Image 1 (cartoon, rainbow, N blue to C red):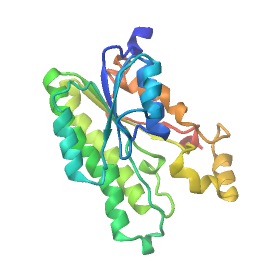
Image 2: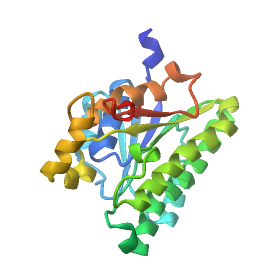
Image 3: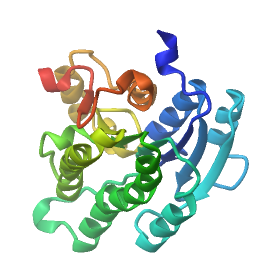
Image 4: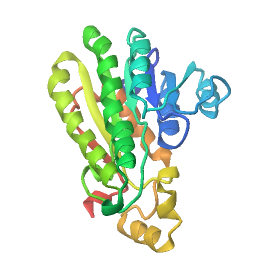
Length: 252
């Protein structure tokens, strides 16, 4: 049974890999046997924490510094990795901007949509070519609870993450029969930089925890199992799914 989750010999690209959820995802894949190409806007070529962590699992790590708000840079990354034989693509890079909708600056809207949705498609399109030619591959997006709900003061983020849910289904409809599984993980309220503003508000943080059946904020490592599952042969008959990992939030 453990062989279903064995990623030995696989090459995984993980965006947003230098911290938070992406760090945990890259670590989990390395622990399962995958070599990692980690992509983040400010990741150094050598000596990053994620590089050291991946190496501690005996796997190779390659860093790529790319700003996902820069479409040309994302296109160049896709062109560069197109022929590398990537087996797993984890589309996790993301950003959030908080402003009420009536005040939400258009430049913030444009950046959030570019980083969280448009660039995800650009990179996926590039790397899917090789996967489709080989007849196998795993693509996993990071969705959100706001793929199902509207949120408050984050209209661009909610729109982008709802778009990710639709994109996952659209790509799965086209690519599943060709051997490429496309799915998403929807993290619940996870303790990361993106949720720092919520966690620093005692009333809001308590209201959130009170609704979560698990009774706590999630940790990035809570995403590890779902990441390995959707990246491995254990999920070969799973495609087009947005899998919540939320401590039971959506069931409440």
